[in-house]
Length: 122
Picture 1 (cartoon, rainbow, N blue to C red):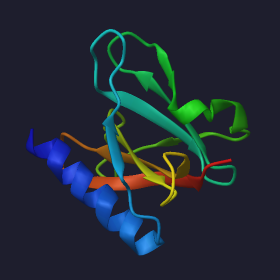
Picture 2: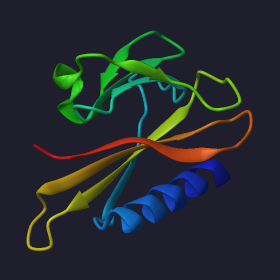
Picture 3: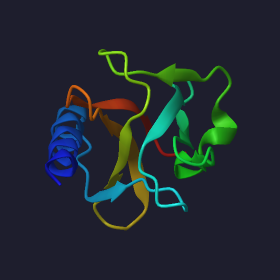
């Protein structure tokens, strides 16, 4: 879908500006097959989790939920709470070890894509 390529392009653009370009891209999908989520993140600690809009299951984003102290819900600037999510992962040049994690979201209402939270992997 076009929204997936738009989101990938935005995560790639953002990661280049950050100096840690992504080498992997993963769409977040719930075990129920849903792909719309309410995203919660903690920018201070670099962590995120999402709740599936279809079944209510919580997806721990890149094993980071345990680092959320004061999670805030991420909402599109148009007011939409349910977002399609994807991860951009940057690896070290000499290995497959993850260096940086980018959590991007795409709004199906206004079609805006952006990186909502990112962190250097611990």
